[in-house]
Image 1 (cartoon, rainbow, N blue to C red):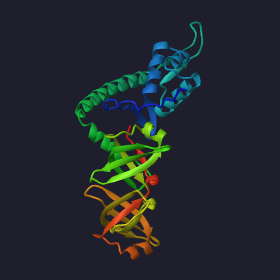
Image 2 (image 1 turned 45 degrees about the vertical axis):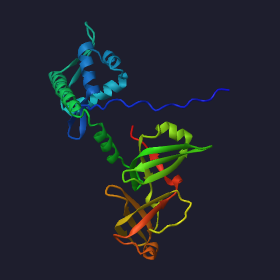
Image 3 (image 1 turned 135 degrees about the horizontal axis):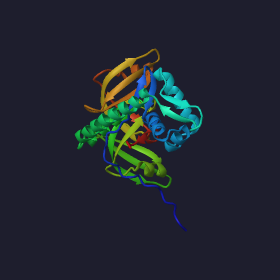
Image 4 (image 1 turned 90 degrees about the vertical axis):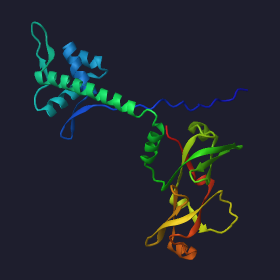
Length: 276
């Protein structure tokens, strides 16, 4: 019997700076690399059909692009000659030729800029990974970065432990497939997502609970609403966990800024992710 193989996570390539150039007229795009390439191909082939084929574009898409550029430019860029003794053809006007040369000049300068920027970021991979994390947008209120310290394989699911910056740890339960797809192994970086509504708060007193995650900290902020309150718990100088609880629970626990408390949530409530 053969066992199915699972895809392994590819090794990360070196960081590079990338970008593209396009020209605009107001809020409308006049030409980017694809449209400029189309104009250049028309110049070389003298034919819409030949140019479209050269840039991998359909005949209709090529004419749509030409119409758009002509309209936005406010003057003809492409002129199609009617058939005659020498047959018809397509030519570029002087403004179109200048547009190609202008774009090529900007493109060369842009390439030089990318080369300089690429050289400047050498050795700053960790900073760019951090930029990627802080730029992430998700509905989960709590986004905590850490390092995988342990992966325990079970009969159905895996248990992954993630060490946070301040020394406390989060445990997540996920499928074998998810563990392998994310490339989660001891020493790898990952982040945990936990919705604020999944976090329970309790006074900082010893208790026996079935929930695996119990993070201790100090209340740093309390925002009371009409029905619920948002309570932020500082685990250390850089890590905060936020919970949404009812005002009644807030009053019962007597939670206020500076009080010690424990954030409690199930391992199944933790979503793990990695930066590609």
